[in-house]
Image 1 (tube, rainbow, N blue to C red):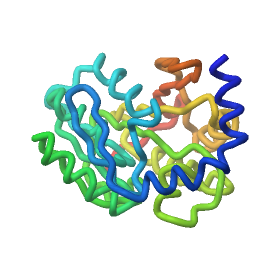
Image 2: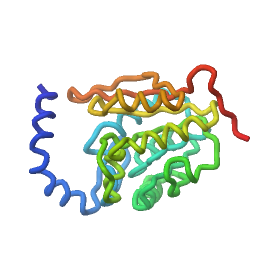
Image 3: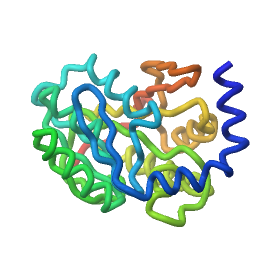
Image 4: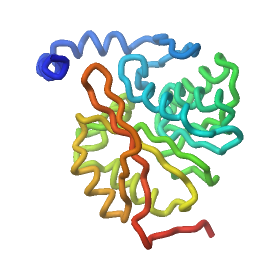
Length: 229
């Protein structure tokens, strides 16, 4: 029943867009697992959707104490804060400078230390990590505003071409997890990964109100390895 509801909601979503745009035009607050998160305008709201919470629950099963962890595309920083609370040494980056500032504020308010700065995917990343977490934009539409960066991967999936090309060059020791919804074009995203000699291996499946969210470990195909110089 919920799947039918979601499909109907998508059809009427143009009617809701002015309301959503108004709501997101101001700083909002959401709470989860004793975290209080400010969500700045143009930043992905982790309280409305389940992907961030799914990654937080998944990460709770990992041993992250004193591990170097990267939150790539951090948004509000909710995941990064949860990772830091598990004892990880966290770096959080985002292409949207407003998201970077939002994460800095939330890290301070939630009393954790996170190294946060602006980076277009791995472009400004110098370190090697034990774990990388990615909650990517899903939908193939042009990017026209900063807020679009949280939702759209480009009309021709440009985000994934760039991401997977860079991931192929990353050290093999890094363990990378990415979450994708069933609403994504999973076949196309998997195709782009294969073009870059990567495999998406499903590690977990979270179902929230009928919506499936898949967590994949991204691995290099057998025989393809890269080590930092």
